[in-house]
Image (cartoon, rainbow, N blue to C red; front, side, top):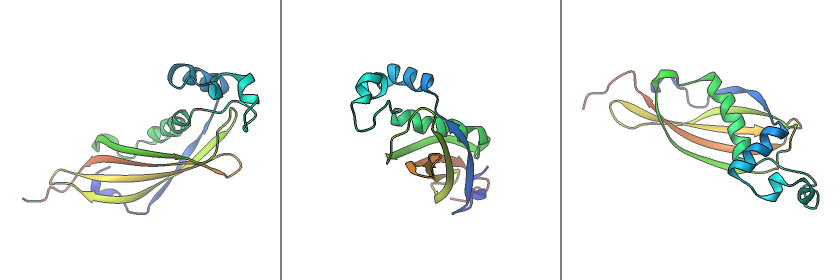
Length: 146
């Protein structure tokens, strides 16, 4: 999808992402090896009472589902930035659903623009667990004259 084809405020539902314990622990052991993510006995003694998923892993589970929809397609040139905020823990067995909203459009130059997407991610109880704002650089269909 070209930059001009994105519509400010348009929203896309993203397929649900289930958090599996084995994947959660494997990710944590490799990338975020703190006891809250890897040690069940320790996690039982925390306010959460059990292991929680690494925050980045929770986001990436949703991101993988977003990529399956491939909104920008071949017109995507690059990612520019991402900002994640976490509000609630994510546990093994949680199912994360999300919406992706086009929250800002900025023409950069003759050839491309920045599309800002805002994700709101909820667990199966409807609680917001995280939000994300991602900027991507997308080709323009109409080349402006300099």
